[in-house]
Image (cartoon, rainbow, N blue to C red; front, side, top):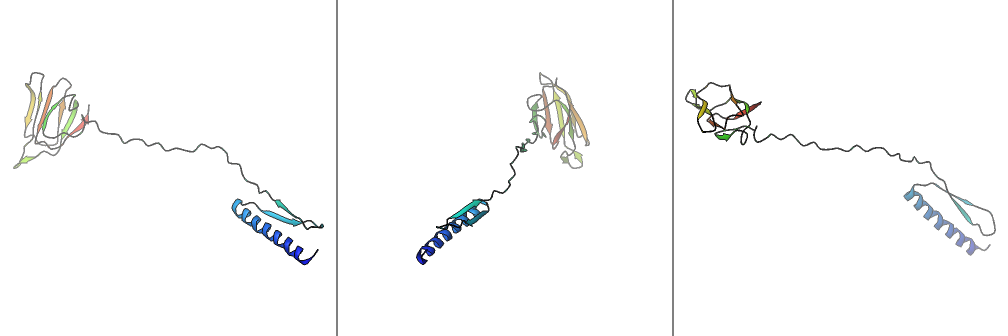
Length: 154
């Protein structure tokens, strides 16, 4: 074999090895290059498989977002105003803890009304904390200067 032919074969082998190295890096598969003696020095490229684990199908936990409980408009804190029972305010026990004061006396007035608008029960100037029970048979409830009136439950 002449020198130019050997240089050409060396060049081809170098190119194959360079390409193989690139493939090895990208695919992460080890490569073995061997030369079989013969008239043309033909390279044999053998890919050496590496053991890989087969991914198993496992359930991927999913996060579900639980919405924060929202307070019903009927049970939220109520302030000054007249409220329809079952429409604007829930029946149940309501607590006054921080009324406004007129001098040294609480200035809180509250009242429960029946269906024809008559006062069932009312109070003015009561010392806090105190509880007002609103019945489902009441029609309206009024709060004036009682601060936040908070729902305690049925």
